[in-house]
Length: 365
Length: 72
Ligand code: SF4
Image 1: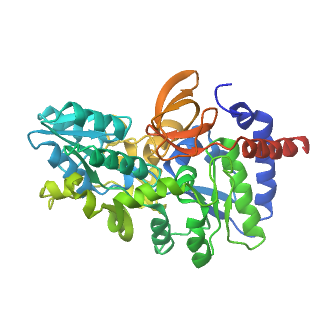
Image 2 (image 1 turned 90 degrees about the horizontal axis):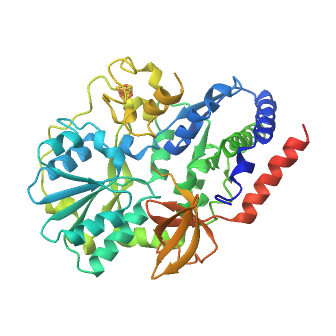
Image 3 (image 1 turned 90 degrees about the vertical axis):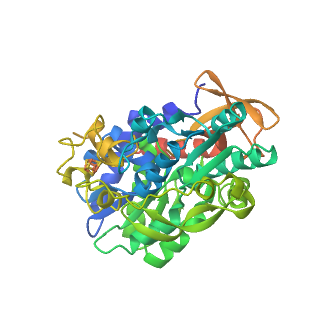
């Protein structure tokens, strides 16, 4: 057995039955509903399996701000690029970041200009690079949500405890619940329900969405990543809509526990504290970012390197901002598949495999 | 980027686990998941185990699908 029960989750008979039930439930809806899939991994799964096109007409699935690379503001990307050009610095990052365009250049270009860039799979690899290069400062670009932030925090604690002072992090981490609140307050955004991210929820727990469900009357269903999970979650949303409920429900019961993962939360909170953060498309959202606490300031790249990024701006003509808030879809962008393709991306949504533009380009045209 | 894949823990030494992912052996830190033990399936993200996979809950979900399919 390679993965537990994967075949059962992918069985055609199950998918057909779920789709039939979803159609049935959709027929009972009083009006069409717009469901936002918050998570980029969901966007990718939905696109790859053609779920968006197969839905009944009364259900519309729109992509949200759940691709961490995509929501990273250009100022943060430019800051990382500037740091990469400082002599004696090795920058490390997850692969998605390599081709993301900053205001003046991208990381691949910076590399051409002499920057030492290493792509890592895990922060532990970045820490290893720091150990092996004691004379260099190794800066990891911390991009990601609550799924990723605890892994970065655990690595920073290890660096701190072992005196690996040349391991630094530029933290552009973000947390999801404040963004959902900001979305609910966005004029022009008509979202009826959230399909909530499974792996963020594995850390923060389903309870974290209760304020959103309560304050805005929006059903929140935490979904797994197989097509069957996503279909079942949409059935649960329809059931809530027709019975007038707005609750947090957990479909992804095999991956998410009530209360989330308290050990991971504690490690994350030991290193990071809430801070206002700028999101592409959503602007500055109070307490939606994670700043490095004073105790770990020796590992804070933002404190060690004071670089000027006042020139930062978003790419001209790119609609990523409006796409990340569900106001536009990639097809609304005049550059989609014209000036902007995965080979020549103009905005980050075309770079990251979880970006809506990239997912639509790969699977939905 | 929040992709996490199921992995089976084979052994744990000093908070590093030997895990099996689709027949391939890899390393994962279990520092974020102190309850993990050999034999468990975990969700692995960026080199860390972040959550246990609850096999009973997985079976429950599958049972629900099966009932649905049987009802058609
Ligand atoms: S297609 Fe390209 S330019 Fe248009 S919104 Fe997407 S990333 Fe931006």
